[in-house]
Image (cartoon, one colour):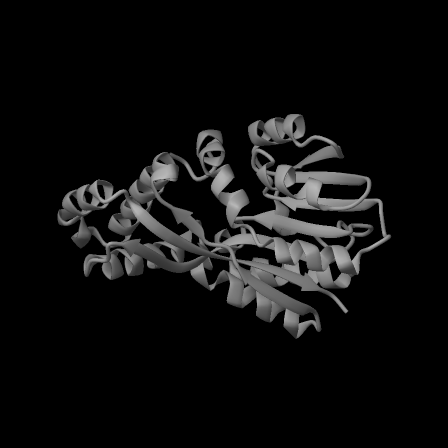
Length: 259
């Protein structure tokens, strides 16, 4: 299932909502008290999952600008992010400048940073800081997975998956699990205050469908990166599926506040 398929985004939405760090939202709300209306830009909005989770946690009237490259996803998001004013922007979000962000109260995104390059993250941080705009980025891959029960092959598949996350795509070296560190550094170089908070998925029997789909994609990516693991993959998948699987998939949220 594609990372950007509506079916995958729907399958993961509740786990995303349960995982996101509400303490960072509370911190933003304290700083922006009595500054409504809020203008929120959701970068790589997908079907609007983050908007459905976040809009009700922010105070007062809001105007959301939903950015994505996929018009199908934008149509779904525009129809399902409710209770706020919504507009959509189709295009390359990595090209946004400080001028584009003028008047924005909050830039936000979910599961985006690990898909960017170091230069793209640096430009995005620069645009936010130059516009004086806080940024809340949720659910960035942290590169750590914990299975119950544990077995020796877990570390090999994890290392291969992490290398796959850092692969070169169309000449772009993706950050993968290095994204949070790179983003924190990019904001702090510009004088912003950055706070991070863990946002792990905790998957067990109640999330069996998501866990199974995530596991298949995780193993497939590892094998694509390290073909030598292909011989181990079928039995490894079977053992994990027979065990549940029970797994904690680590992510990190961050809030950057320009001074």
